[in-house]
Length: 184
Image (cartoon, rainbow, N blue to C red; front, side):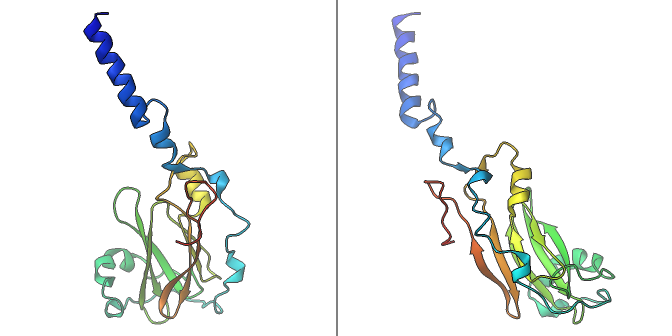
């Protein structure tokens, strides 16, 4: 190797080290592991019971009930005839909003009124007899990121359906110390 080549190679190694590329420091802090998630602190479906279920399905959609409902017309119309599968009165559709993105949309089977919930990267978890909705549930994250390198911008969020829409009740966002931060 010539002296000029050695200087260029040395400059590259020094620059890469200063940027953290060679050591992996730049990417290490951008991810968290599902093993860090405090599952014992997360809300459970049983703590958010919904009213008694109805024995029939969705008959029509009230597109005037939410200003964004017409955007989801095709998906909502496909839900007509479905029985409730969330909070005992709602038929849910998860609508894609791009690669790695889904929007939670549901219609009340009694009124046809539409509620639009959060957006998630790794989908949702919900139950028919509970008003709790989990965006980016831990099990989905473990499946979506099998190398256990979950971007810090993606974390579980727990919502409760109220008469006014979705209320954030708990979330866990990893911090630089991997201890988590519930102040989302």
